[in-house]
Amino acid sequence: MKIKIVLLLTVAAAAFALGRISAQEVEPSCNMCDASYVAAEELHRYEAIAIATGAVDQQVRSIDIGKTNVQIALARRGELTSRRGRVAEHDLVTEVYVVLSGGGTILTGPDLIDPVRRPPDNNAVVRLNGPGNNATDVRNGQINELKAGDVLVIPAGTGHEFIRIDDHITYLMVRVDPDKVVPLMNLTDSESYLAEREN
Image 1 (cartoon, rainbow, N blue to C red):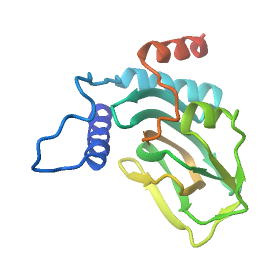
Image 2 (cartoon, one colour):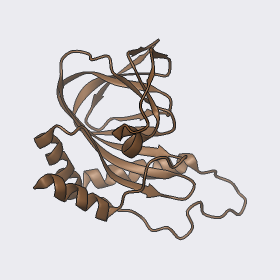
Image 3 (cartoon, rainbow, N blue to C red):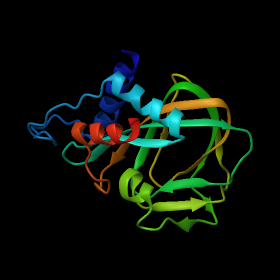
Image 4 (cartoon, rainbow, N blue to C red):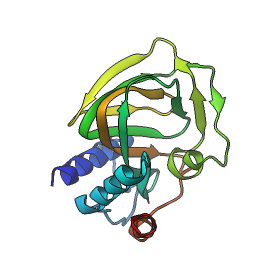
């Protein structure tokens, strides 16, 4: 239930931030669109796959909500005792992390050091978060200690890297994709993905 409430609140906040509030008559940006539901049980199945296989970032949905797409992903990272110098940056997709369990230290910043473009056929570029860079570090970075219940917003163009994880961190990612660079993914696609990996 807690996961459902957090998911709904996060998606509602993202949709509110993208919309314009006005006294004028406006048309909905997603006319006659149905809501999308992700059950906690489905997210638990993704987490079980992550634990069993080491998969870090798994897309659960990619939904067209009119002027933008929104993705829901589940990420789980294990213990990390030393920094790897692998800063990720996504040019067009903003990520909102909602920490479900565990915790870790994350470095963020927009000023990338030694950025290298990800190839266009990279799985993350094609299926998860669109074009971007990997870098060795960021200048004047910000460090946040994340724990269960925390939320972190990483705007498009901002580098980010976990630099310490004591045991694990599991977090829900809400990705805001206004350029619609990530392919759509529905419940049927999710079930196919899960079935392939649970056997």
